[in-house]
Image (cartoon, rainbow, N blue to C red; front, side, top):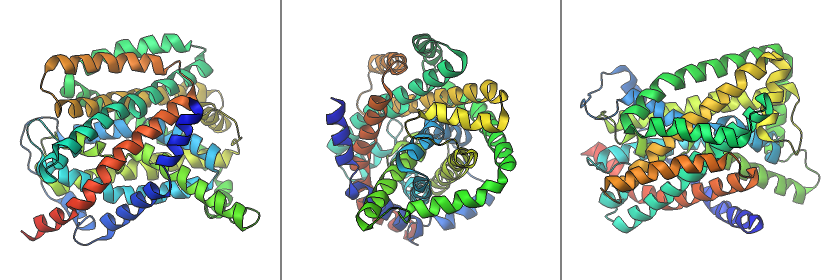
Length: 426
């Protein structure tokens, strides 16, 4: 089964999807008709607020919560193990492209949203006028919420808590299920309040710890950056064939982990921002761009540099163990008391954020409140199961779910790009 899923994952994440993500991202970021860069001027203007739903700040923190889990900590370590230092370069490229993709997602979501439907289901249904494709996306998103936004997070929490405090994985799973249900059963308002409080604190603590370690190992930074750029293009590989294979693998792994971190092109950002009280589509698009900067360029880069500067990268290691060993090199035993709880809480925040995405997707399919409550219960149970699953299966399922969302969302965004231009010239 693992072999089949791995083959399916490699097929879905082939050159076509990677090229589409990078190509569309560059076009969306640089094209004058999308107005990505021009929207930065909105930071200095007062924004209208409808007073309904989740606030823009809460949505930004919930969106960061959905993105800043294991993707920018454990996922970065996994990228380095699989693709080497060169994968970091392609995570940066993925983030640049992701800024353009997330901007368009949020603009389209705000433009086509209704009281019940937001995000990709809204612009697929009302923009493309394809309720069938909107339904397929919603199903894929619900599946992704159980994979990328659920089991990978609880698995990472269980792994690092067991390694640090010898807490059994099954016990972590039970605790996750109980606390998670207390939060998600309160709906969007409780999820938003939780994210608005915890995410800024966790981000500050993590970046402070990483900054201290990078200062201690600052003499290694020039060689680390040199290694990143050399490995990104396969210069160290022996022979043209090996070099080409190394380059392709670094690009694939880097883009996949970059997408896992910032979720650009998947449509999840629109689900989170489309239900906010903000009225300006361009401003919500800008918020998404700033989240990618905070997520990938700050947190992901900090994680990668800490691992590479401390020289703890070894093939065959578990991602959570690798990150913990790297922080131990700079912080000693203090890392055992700070980092595991921070990673665990990051992962937990991602659980709540992706539950919100899944709930919004389900609302686009049915208005029956019993289905929504059933989803919340199943989501919590899946989090407990993910804590004891094998890592390879969990990550493979997450990558497959990501690809399915992207295949639904990216072509629709491409077709609706003229709507952005028409909106600006109207």
